[in-house]
Image (cartoon, rainbow, N blue to C red; front, top):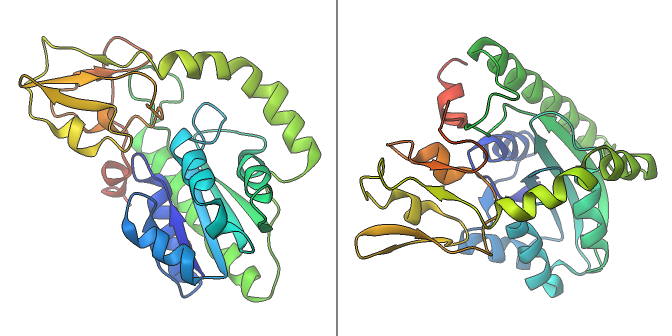
Length: 255
């Protein structure tokens, strides 16, 4: 099965590549032109994304809505990565996709290392993060084998999952997420104006003006990609300083 994914810091990319390889397909990013080509030609695809504050990333919502006609009539299997728990992470995408005329094949929830690097919550030693990744890979392998027999998991797709996601997390986190989307902090005293943040921002919320990065509120998808890639650790969202840069490529060195 071929797959389209959005990945802020590499977790979802790794999971989708592992899944598509196990199901004899290929994985492409929604940020590439290949994503639309895949969407046009395939009748059955996997869609992968992380949960951001227990919600579907705004960039993924936009992709689905802008390409509703291409999604119509497709069969979609949803893969969701999360730092701890989302309740209905797959259900969020499923409900939106159904409105576009999509048949949902199933959902897969995968716990991966967290990507919030400027606060202490969810922080784990490297050995534990490695174990989390290996557990996710094992679950992907089991899922791929089941799918070849026509059996799809239904993670996050039931009514009680929706209740758990809504009352357990989203009612608390949605106001926080809305604020964060407007409050990215670029600490100019640390910034060396290398431009990397602007070049990798998936929503082009950061641009370079007069040799300095400038954040424009309203489009940020809260993926933490810029904060976790900045060479000077000059970007924060929740905290005041970057305690650890959380990217899959860093954790993968210990696999």
